[in-house]
Image (cartoon, rainbow, N blue to C red; front, side):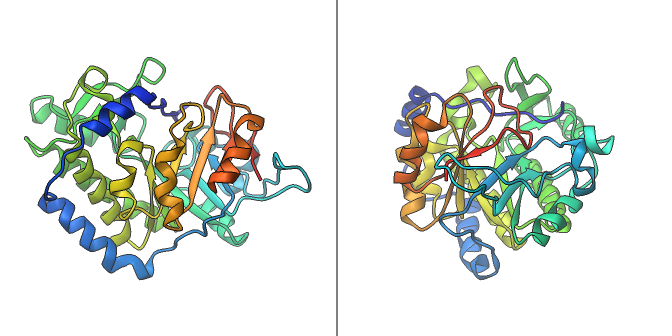
Amino acid sequence: MGYTRRLPIVAAATTLAATALVAGPYQLAASAATSTDTSASAAVWRPPLESRWQYQLEGNPQYAATGGINVGICTVPQTGGACVKPTVFDIDLYVDGDVAGDNSTLNTAAVKAIHARGAKAICYVDAGSIEDFRPDYKQFADWHKAHGNSLLGKPFSEDFPNERWANINNDKGQRDFLLKMMKARVDKCAQAGFDGVEFDVVNAHEEGKKVTGWTVSAATQLTYNRALAAMAHAKGLSVALKNDLSQAAELASNFDYAVNEECFQYDECSELGVFTKAGKPVFQVEYETSPGSFCARAGTLGFNSIKKPADYSLKDQPYKPCR
């Protein structure tokens, strides 16, 4: 159906990655990213700590006029009472192919409709795996072949064989190429009017070569993630740290909020406290866990948590915010 959900990072992998973090001076690119974050900060939208969010990466043809996104969604929260509306929508850069007939139409219609309702839009971009249904896929495939098959790794998972882990090392210029391609995507996010960016699959160092096909160090992951954050800020967009819990403490100063999947299920949520303590929201989603088992804890932690289906689909419904 086009869009893919990310597999959770098991607690054991997070623990191993945390012990592998490399101390020492940042590489040049990481230092540049840090300085850019500071200079661009005044122009960037930053959501309030308590912001209700919706995660809809799959379009609904019923809402074709608004790019397949149900911008008027209003749902009774787990706490009960009247229905509530999200103030932040995390949606794909492109209109779902099931709605537009292709996968190359920027979802400007959804962004305009979201803004018309006083809400904000975050642009979903996959920065760590390469999906073969994207309009720029051929550029990745051609570069891979021209540089000794050094860019595209193993399939993301058995469930999602249509995307492959990207090699973010730079021994053959892979990271430089990826950042150039991500910049083109971020430029399109800005063109479509988005307010922020979610870069997905930015935790290859936690998964290891057996999963990804590449040996990626924690230091290399930090360099790549900081460069992505700086790139978003340079375009006047805010930026989310997606998962990568083992590096949350080191990256919180570079990112404006966190997007997390299933930290309650895997008992990893404490790693995200560095964001809320800094006044930065955590947009959190559970798939297989019932709201009754995590919403109270989400409230205590100050997270903006929602429940989406156990099959990892991200349509407009079902959708259950905790508050």
